[in-house]
Amino acid sequence: MKKHLHRICCVSDPWFRRLKDEFKSPAIVIGLFLAVLSIWGLGYIAGILVALFFIAILLFGIFALPYLLRVTSPVQPGLDEQSELAFSYIENKFACCQWLREQEAIDALNDKGIDNERAEEILGHLIESGKLQQRADGRICLPN
Image (cartoon, rainbow, N blue to C red):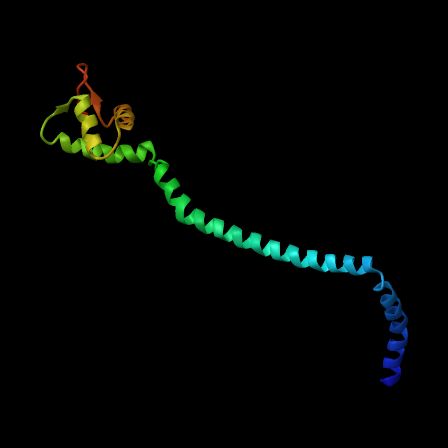
């Protein structure tokens, strides 16, 4: 073990002597100091950037996401699916009378929270699919 340790010391001794001579030059010392400082500084800056990134995600989740969900319009169900529900609303109106004016059918859909434009689309779809009939005078009734 002592021989092995002595051999390591013999090999490393000239290297350490040369290193000692290089440290006498202030340029090497300043360069090494700046290298260590820059590595430490870059790690510090990277840590700050990661922390700021997580803070930004947190703030986005707290403030921006609820605002965007409130501002954007909700996804409406498909025309077929919505027309099935609308048909049940309009069918309830036919319990008291045999026919409806087109505006009365649209008003029945408006009462359920469907806007005018979408209600007209649904009404047209129900007439095209044969679930409702439109008479010559423009009134709507159930098929015979």
